[in-house]
Length: 384
Image (tube, rainbow, N blue to C red; front, side):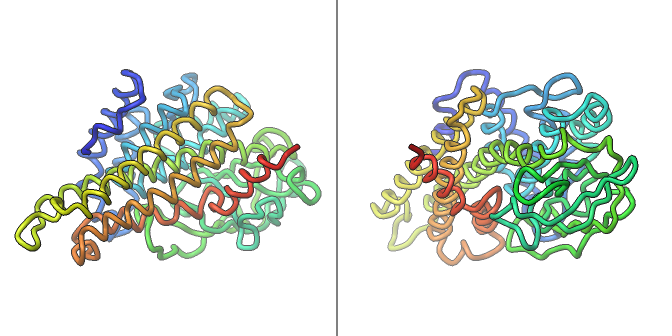
């Protein structure tokens, strides 16, 4: 297979984006993927190099330096980058979601203050919705924001925050009104505002090149001009961010699976048993065929969801859920099968396949669990 299938069904301009991102992944990310994982390093210098190519604000408008690409081009880029490091690319995708939220819903003052530095990745962004007591049931969040003079006072905590403690800008959903989604607002919180602190760095199965911490808000003072959008709009902003976030994380799974297949091809061609390469066995060939077909089916669904997002289709949210469900499930299985083809070597950290396997596992949990994706899809099917 190699890399040919990654450029099928895309236009010439899109192929150029794919080629640029894959070249960056091969040169700047893949050689360091192992050490970033083992040493738990967020490679800020590499992020800034990527920002020079436009990776810091891929679908932000050009007004403040964004690349103004569509979600399809963005998906293609995230897939290519993930072949070099899934964990680091996933963080870039979250940062992009935060920048887009400010670009789409922020005031001119907020845009001019935050976007140039976010797009250049001189400052990093984190998305803060999940809480210890509200994961899948995000609308039940309990973090509060109380208006006091010209400020909001935030109290509560956020869990599993990618970039926590290292990011500079946090988009935090907090309750300004009654129960349910309409009582939630979104705030732009700087890491040096009074009352914000961070929990211990979590030790994780994968995604080790990005820190994960709780974000703790204890009478955190946020200027009223840092309210993003209007009061009560926060949950809508968060969900719109997640639609794109689901195609982004699905794209990261595509990249993991692509790299896993490439590693399996390389290994099975050189590994010999019973006097011949294991690639010559029909069982291996059929497994590879299944993996390639599954990857391509996932890729086509992700790209369809991205196209619908670009078109502003009312069906986009359901297709994003389908794409996230299909790609993250199937691509994880591809990584698992590729590891199996490596035999015992696949279980060693000297071989990169185990890292694609570990890093892609969490994609079935975050940006809405795959069980929640099934809820979204089935509810749409049952609407009369």
